[in-house]
Image (tube, rainbow over all chains, first blue to last red):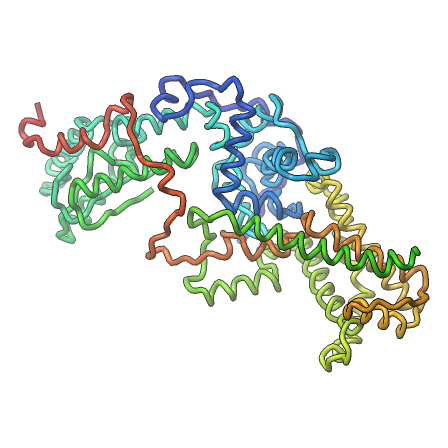
Length: 297
Length: 266
């Protein structure tokens, strides 16, 4: 049965104080972004914004064709949870839309008041940092929208623009940096991954008295399994499940210490990192000469 | 003089602004590439399937049914009545009038009488709910009042202040055939006509472009043919490179794989 969640009354600024912890310098260096917020951040961001607009049809299209019908307004879990009006998908996109109107449309340039334009100033930047990081990019709003306007596209664009000026969060940059250091989001070192797999082999032998292998880095295996790294850390029953399934099917498989993570936090940062994290799967598959990649997250 | 401007200069000017503006907006949208596959599932696998999905989105607004039933009722009714009204008005611009246009005349007439109702509903909805009031901007009200103005003046023209229709048709045909004629019309018709011209001028600069935007929306017009490789045209601008701070680059993995297994364990 469909029982809709109660829609909260608007509470302006209810989640304005919930700001993500800013990125650390060491992680920013590892993900190839400016160490700290650029002195000329506004110019850098506007330049990046022009580039993002030219590279993504969705961004300009979605900024321009929203009719403010409000169908998405009560679909965002962040709005339902906080009641903060800026967490309504349309209002979240408006943060970018106002800046777009101000700097990229004729109407906004000459008569900003009427054309819903706003300067990219410190207050706006603070709003961007707060509310564009209060979106999980689940795209529920895009399902509700009569035109399929995808606020995740807007959010990703805004995060990419901020990242170009050295503005990002610790959570995202730290995880991406860990992938480049250890091959997974959790920071499990290759030796620890192997050790964990050996432990599971031994454990299965002891408890169920069966010999099932958990191959690691085996060149020439048929299948490369890229699990969520937590499967070999906390959800080990899932890991055991994969091994049993491959064992029963008689398929040769392997995990890779170079890429043992299916989740890609680059998506929350920028295109360069999104691609670089994904590229590890390809690279591992090439080096291990596998025929297929099984990839979950 | 006023007649000359309103019934000759402005119509051509606004038609030109409308056409050039819409074209310009489309070119701007089409120029930007679609780098990733972001189609909202469940999605069709074939182009024909996409055409059906689009037709559904244009004619039935299925997303809104699930998202907001009252909004769907008002929005869908308005758009369908608008189609009827637009098609009925073809009778003024075509000679001879095609049979099907004759056929929908009565229905179109009543559609025109009814159209202020869903428009008013949309306006009330915008003002009555806190959330919609918060997100509404000047442009939203302007569009609604403009359409209300056009539809109410049209209703009054059809029911209370009946214009001499032969003159109206002469005017419209004159414009269509680039041979404008001078006619005497009621001031209410002049207002109705003027508001339509304002709508034409306003259209390409406003959210009314959603009518065209829908067809380009990647979440709706892409296919779910995931087995086919999707290539991002500007992907090469982002070469994968590892900086010295990244301690596990691909070269290191190659070295690790070369080492014999036993040595690895120590």
